[in-house]
Length: 270
Length: 270
Image (tube, rainbow over all chains, first blue to last red; front, top):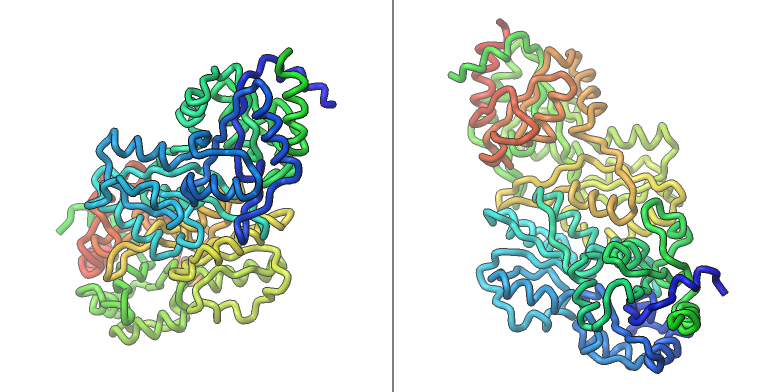
């Protein structure tokens, strides 16, 4: 058992990334990562609080939860912190009317939002909908605004599908930032506001919480900057070079969620 | 007549950008910019040397020159410095076999290049071919290389077509740089090597040459960093804010190429 397991003492709440930790997405929905269904069940039976914290922005929460339940997970929409609902709150607060560069699968999350005469652009993981035409339209909307506002649901570089690595929204956000000479506002990991909202919804302080994810920068680095502990799993988009990352060092590296839960159940109460 | 015209004294050679200076591209080929056909003719009848220096990477030189001749320009392939032929030289010198993320219109420039078992990616202005699928393929090729090499034909942010502003290759290069955590090598303006090759081909020293373009960063800033003088035309992608650019100040701003040629013919010999 890893010697660093003692670092998990005093943990009261666990934030779980979804893609790459619970399942790998792909054709037909995706496949669960070995041991993760049981690991989530064990966590939920323990005294630890559990919440899911995802940058998934291609599917609505309803769709995502339906997919995970189909794979065997005990999970409900109310347990998931996701960027699209968080973005809707921000749009309403600031009177912003977005042009949506998003996948059709997440469009329903924006059903109540006024999209007429847009005064900002919201970009999410649009997947195949990142056509030149759609990117150029978003670019033109931004260039016509006096104060261009670009809201990006996460800024991930890539994720892993069963078929291989896939470009994520962050790459396309960079493209628009460069073309327009602007900087996007990020809603999602690694934004501190996003982690804080997940902690609030879980009712646990940052120093009592641990984030478990497959993204060394977005999950581990982001959570640590908020005062949380963070573990990286060697599943999903994990690459061996992550363990030698020049800027981010996880509190621990585990082969998968099952190992993380073993360690948590052994050490958290101490 | 502009007071700064005296700064053109001693000019012996002129580098002309093409898109936005000679013509605006668009449906059906494009339209010449008013006065530019005659301006090029007058320049060529003068004692000044003239060369065309373009970042056009969507069309082959042959196609581009055919289009310009159709619009009334006196121009031949041998007078054009363009990034695709320059990239081919580099690929050959370094034994690189590219995966090509380019428009079909420029593919013929790479006909002699070995593209089997690629060990680098060449990205050009692919236009509508910047699909998610094509971008993702280039990304996957780079991620599988131990030492990923990305060669970008220019790094323009956008250009102007008759239908509006269009995202240029630079935006997509940024996307791949970010996703892979690498930096591209630029072949084209504003790379100093590219300007120098155009000057060599023209047989004129940098301090005796002036660049005329519509891009404050790629044309004006790039040429000035090479020791050339540079004028920005208020045609093509020019925007009024360019005249207040925080980092680049042109030696002069002119309404169009015709005004630039008027000034050159008046002052260059002095």
